[in-house]
Length: 370
Image 1 (cartoon, one colour):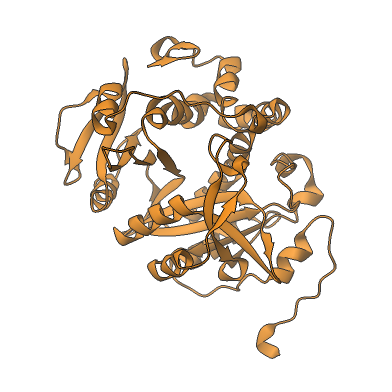
Image 2 (tube, rainbow, N blue to C red):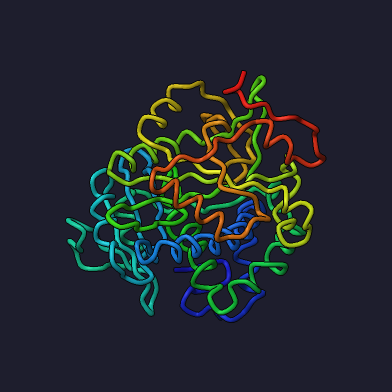
C-alpha cells in the first residue's frame, strides 16, 4: 500500500511524528474522539472485569461499506488482529446481511479473503486487488477538508493524551486502523462506517457504539442525531441477530468549538460529563426511521464537505449510566444492567441541562408525580 509518507511496509512504527502526521489527515473531531475512547476503553475493561468471565472483546476492526453503481454491493470488512472465541459467530452473523471479507496483516501488507459460514471461502489475496474487484472502481483519493482539520486541536489531542495513553500499542490500535480505513477501504466505496467495539456476552454479540457529543434543542425537548446511513446499517445488523448498545458521553459544553481535552485538563468540566446509553432494538430503530429526516451541516460528514441526512432520538429514551466523576466500577455496573435488560433511571432533559456549562438552574420534576 502506497501512502503519502511512503510504502506502508517501510514506515517507522516507532516514529511519533509520523504517527501524528497520519492521524492529522483526519478531522480534528475524529482525533478528539480517540481521547474519549481512551476513557471508554477503561470503562469497558471494568464491564468485562465485573462480568465474572461472561464477557470479552473481539480484537477486530470492522468497516461496513456500500459500493458505487453498478456494483451495488453491501460488504463488511473485518480485520482480525487476533482470533478469539466468538469471532466465527460474529462473522456468521454479519453474513446474514452482508458479503464478508476477513482481513489480516502480513509482512507485505493487508490481505483479504471472502468468508462463507464463518470460514475462509477463498485464498487470501492482496487487499488492493480484492477491493478493486469487489467495488468495480479505481480508488479515489480520500481528502478531508481543511476547514475541519484544526492543527491546534490535533496537536492537543495527540500529544496531550493519545500518544502517552497507547504507548507501544499506538500503531496497532490507532494508526493502522486509520490507515486501513482512509487509504485502504474508503477510496473504493461511496459510504463507509466503522463499528466501535464488539463485545461477546455469553451467547450474545453486542455492538458497543460510543459517541462524544451534545444534544440539540427540538422544540421543548432535547435530542441526539443519528446519521441516516448509520441508522440503516444498524437496522441491518440488529436484523442479523446482533444487539447494539448506543452510548453517548455528553459534552458539558454544547458547542462544536470545544473538543475533548477537558476530559484530562478541567476537573470541573468532567464532573458535568454524563454517560448515557440505550439499546437500539429493532422496534426503536423502526420508530426512529419513521421520523422526520433533517439535514446537518457539512462538518458532520467524514470529509467535512457534504451535508448529511439524519434522524433523531429523544434524550429521554436513554438511560443514565453515570457521570464522568463516578467510579468506573459503578458506571460498569449500570452498563451491565442495560446488557442484562434490567431497568435503570431514564434520562431527563432537565438533568442534562443542569449539567451544561455554564450551569442553567433547572429544577427536575418527576413527571410520574404530576
